[in-house]
Image (cartoon, rainbow, N blue to C red):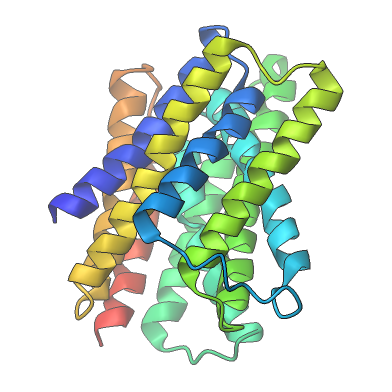
Length: 287
């Protein structure tokens, strides 16, 4: 359980750092680009993927490149959502992307559904609708509300799309570690090229250092989560539920205590529905 708690803490710390970045004068895009440098290096050292024997002809490079573009793009949307919608709503939306992943599993991968999955998906959709509705503010803040809703939806759909593409890619027979390393390397190269062309620089020293630190947390989040699944392979529901519930709860606590966010009625309802959805979906893994 310590691994799950540590992974959840890393996930929430990433959100906290991204939310603080703008107020402290850091460039989120540059941080996100350099985060993939340390993440790819740590992935190489930790998982030791067999990159030397990759089949050039059998590797789905288009999918790898698509993921390499999506990863930093959705990471940036996460940073924007944290700024406009707050850490509580963003964490709920990010975690409930699993609802869309499950719908894709049903329609694309022909996965069988039971009544608990249907209930969990329904609760998850209601939770997302609740947090989107909570962004409706007065006329003065209408533009900000629209931006908040826009980035929340992008986070919800984006993380689900990444999950579906990962499942499809690994289903082709490529090892998880190889896919992960190639994704990180591709995301780093493409992000670096983009910021070089747009800002004529690889980034200031403070952004590079902050990005490398962000990459350590990003990789630690993944590595600890995978390790927890390996150690608790007979009880995947505990890992799934523990991770998602802890991230939502810790995210809510940090939003309330650190950033003084207000817990509106619809946000609180979304939080409760989201937790209920995660519990239902986790229980389906144990039956």
